[in-house]
Amino acid sequence: MKALRFTRHGAPDVLEYVDVATPDPIADSALVRVHGASVNPSDVKNVSGHFSQTTLPRIPGRDFSGVVEQGPREWRGVEVWGTGGDIGSVRDGTHAEFIKVPIGALVRKPAGLDHAQASAIGVNFVVAWLGVVDYARLREGETIAVIGAGGGVGGAVTQIAKSLGCRIIGIDRHPIDASSPAGKRIHAFVPFDEHTVAGVRSLDGLADGVDVVFDSVGGIAFETALGLAKRRGRVVEISATGRRRVEMDLIDFYHNETQLLGADSAKLGVLESARLMQAVAREFDNGKFDPPVIAHRYALAQGREAYQAVAQGTPGRVVIVPG
Image 1: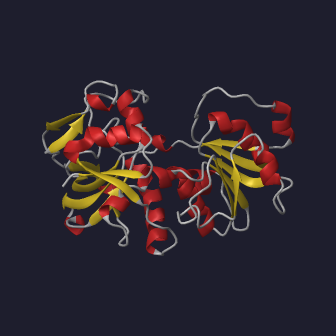
Image 2: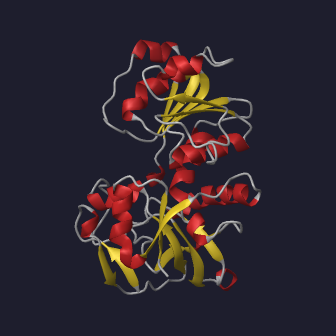
């Protein structure tokens, strides 16, 4: 089969378009023909050497959508999707014509999504679900502030929060497109700047802060995130943009009884992620979530270009379509 592979870390030009052996699924695995595989910023970081767990040589890529070609009879020909922190790091990833996955990781793709759309869901929605539902335990009627609401993870958070019946405050450097999934769901927008905390707390009923803060930016946004939380509010951190070491007023923190939660979807392998993908699939099938807009599609042979587009911050979702 054809695949992208890297034998050393570096910029996207270390990726090679090569012929490799098609995986041979053993008794507890299935072979999936990949019809769509998104390129995430974390994939670019993986190739550049940010993840110590990655072993080389390696086929990268975490998210996929495709059709089961070999495996249990009841799964053959079924359209499936998935993601996993182990895919592309300690097991070969999705930027190839085929991927081998454990049978227990097989999850039916939502019928309303095509393969390109389905392949652009995994990383964003899994970390969003992990932080919002599993860790922060956001409840109906609560208010959540989403820092980085215009991004992929932030957009997923707004969709999950809306499905739970919550009030959503979108925070970003630039106004959020009103026609985007996030733009259609936020109840108010506040710019990310030195006045963000005051801006949110000036909104009706939010003088004391919000119940949950989902900070998809981190680093430069960390102190702002803490400042938005009401007493006993929950703050979820998933990134460290700009700087990895941050400062906080410890007295203010414990006086406010703030709960600080870290969420890392890379810790969830493809088997552990299947439960979350099933939950997300149900919401898509029930019409509660909107499909992502695919801005750029690349053939597998154009893998370097796809990675370069993501590395350069090209707006929109980038997907590799193997063929």
